[in-house]
Length: 554
Image (cartoon, rainbow, N blue to C red; front, side, top):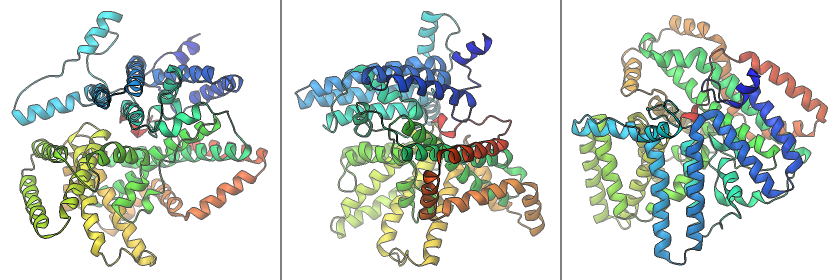
């Protein structure tokens, strides 16, 4: 009975995640029931909604009620905007949808951050008061909700997904779903609910009423994705994080500076393995149920520029920001008052939270260059708008990842790199010579190391920590051959895993495709045996330290 109670109770220390046996037992039970009811679309949507809400409860507890509120509100807003005949009323509904969703996201994710930033800017001492917890405890009983605001798992993902649903109806790209449970199924579909990929209404809703189909090729492909995702998470991400990266990141000053460089190279592999591993499993599990999710990663460390990297990395977020922020701001063609206001707000925000007052002079210098450019170069104003829109989009993307100044700085650095690249590629002597191996290698090397450098702000959570690591790298690099050999021997297994991970990542896609084709064409019994062997070997790398998926915090 105790085991049964634990199976249905919320335990913060043991969420229901892809790397645990409990999830696969849960998924097996889901598939058994799903196989019996999948022909009735309404029943199927209702069942998968209930299952998905239970899955979310197992990761976030009573915050499932917040998800329920989001579902109810956005379903009504979507229907209202479809039924409205007035363009003005539709815009009011869009505004209401944005306020509803972003207020929810802002309260739970950014309340402390914005309050602390305000206090820093104006030297005040305001404190965050969780009024919702007080109301909830008054209704459900004292102690039901903690009075500290806790970030619900996946809130950034299902909020962006909900916004896209209402906006896509406004743009007439989709029509509202037939009933409430079709909508709740679309938003809560458990494989992608808590860490993506962000599913767009136009891509997923047409599948809700399609018959279930799964042939041998689809089955084999799904198994490959799941196993690949587990290997990325358990062998690559968790192993090198627990045995090397976390130790260096927690105390960079205790190691020579070159070790921090090695740790950040490892972190680039860790976060790729962790996040792409999750989405691989999500895509594979979805395919076993007959639903297709779009690819979220495309060998990002093969990118030859920052722009190419962001076309390959977290593609569902990139396309969302492009379609619902960058293009509405004017994209690469125009800009309005919103572009300039947002740019000024971001500048003031960056200056005050970082205390880098030099940014003011950099901004004024850039504006001077832009003004001169507008006066003497035809259509230069278009480039100004493009650059500002890019910076705004990337800063918002950084803030989406986390409520701290480090994420804002990380987003701003990537935005600045995209702006610089847009000008560099116009006169770069290497831009059209990518077929030369040495040039191709050099472009990948520069891009990879820039992305890894910016991730110092991504990995180190506390304000000021990145500067500690940078100081250690710059002033205490302390590279000697003896020290290097000592580090290699101490963390030998970690470096072998890192080397293997990068080699596989950089293999030509044709080799990977041939391997998948070979696996798909093998008899089913051989597939089962090979997967069993891989799983047994893989779980030998499991650490005693529990490592949730990195993007759960976003």
